[in-house]
Image (cartoon, rainbow, N blue to C red):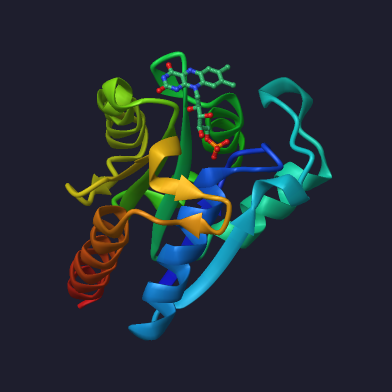
Length: 171
Ligand SMILES: Cc1cc2nc3c(=O)[nH]c(=O)nc-3n(C[C@H](O)[C@H](O)[C@H](O)COP(=O)(O)O)c2cc1C
């Protein structure tokens, strides 16, 4: 199972990145073949100003079986850079693939913002979403990383379910 984990935040202190890395460790332990994308390593252009990095990322993603999108909540919606990745780097051939969402937010009240990912990916590429979402906020972290046992537990459950559903969809 080829899984791309895309940490889309450009924040140098991204919490989404930390959660995506935790998901990567869990999926690798289950035998997934993971491509980890840290969006901070790319300088993507918007739709009408695409550049070599857009091409490079599209090429890397085009043969993936499924996706874990690391999202940051911006204004109760999808962060700008993730929207740019979706708009410029997802090949139409990726229709019907599975995706999961790992979401970092400032507060608890924005959890429904991930529904915008559901709308975008289902309507545009008929992608299927893993119903479980990982949602973390500042209070789940300390200077060493994730300190919330509840968040750690939800990451393990997410990885179990993502690997299970992802593997079944390949059969
Ligand atoms: C432009 C902007 C808008 C934001 N809007 C929201 C919001 O609507 N709700 C919320 O809970 N947090 C909001 N935040 C806080 C981020 O979601 C939070 O900092 C999160 O950790 C970002 O993910 P990251 O750490 O992976 O970059 C916003 C942050 C920025 C920069």
